[in-house]
Image (cartoon, rainbow, N blue to C red; front, side, top):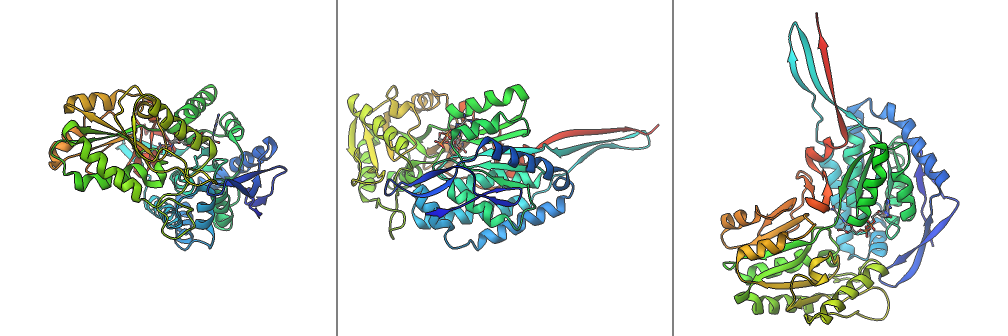
Length: 468
Ligand code: NAD
């Protein structure tokens, strides 16, 4: 059994309790990690609070630390990607790619500035709009991209001058704890603390008196609890929540070109991406050929243990999520939908689920209306574009969406009518460190990434000087 430690005040903390981590490819516990207690969380919060004044003083020093972090992660220690695969399930090459993206995100953020604006400077006075850090940030992440999504928080929070207490999902704590261990010698004590534990630990963090901001990525349901917990103390929040992202195929699209991109837009990371395609709207006349191509791709995708060479789709990450996907597909079946391919578990151990294409289904069925967050894609026929747009927008979600057309300009006109944070044309999952990413409606509050994400870790101060 591996023994990873929390990082509190720059030191390794084993914790007084522990909890098991399941490998989703086997369904078996393969490691134990600390289960952070209230007292240990208090130590982490206190360390972050004490580290804040010195850390917030020197921008150049902070930029250097971020560049050092990026440098270390560019040559990651043996075992980081492997650990990510074992706890999360994704193929090893994708885990290595996530580590690289984590480094790249950090390096990009290190290149940003936080400029002050001088609005007036003359003999009468000087007015400057400055950006100040908030203090301690409580960062809470989900289990689908534990390292990359943690870096979306850590890098801007630290560059802006805040200190951080970071909690990963209880399903994927190990890579984050490893990150804390790797960075212990680079980041000054108390500046970045990592704690592991269950949902209760998250709740303790959001109601803790120390943090001034909560940066949360997870489900809508939990996001609402986080917002409620933040309210009494008026903590700032950024909420990156779930999505039910539509892809609308227009009648002029070339199916052979777009279908493979749509397939991977839906099934990358076994569908466990907040902004993955969760439902596809296809013109009636293209419906049957579209189902054929998607089903063929689903049958051809190699499902397996992420550690095995050639695996394209790993298991679903955890048992509750496996049960949820199973339940949504069974519900669709009961409501008369046709399971074109898939619709069953693969093998007898672990949480493998066959990539599933569901046809003859429409709005009003849970698989279409809810976020499945797994390898099951409903494909829905439509009569005209207005109808498709209306159905695509008839949801509380608003994370992203895509439109597919041979005419990119027309595609862009249709995409602009989607009620979501990222509207893509002829692509999906086009996420980059310099682009703001966030959700409309219930999919979130605020954005991450780029200068916009960075500034969300600051507060405005107007320094207004009368000179006479
Ligand atoms: P989740 O909401 O169950 O958990 C997310 C994190 O919140 C975990 O660390 C969990 O322990 C913690 N948590 C649980 N209850 C809490 C509480 N009451 N207070 C504070 N923290 C609490 O989500 P999940 O199942 O881990 O992740 C899947 C969800 O995340 C999906 O809905 C997905 O769309 C969403 N997601 C969104 C984005 C985005 O950027 N918008 C990215 C990835 C995932």
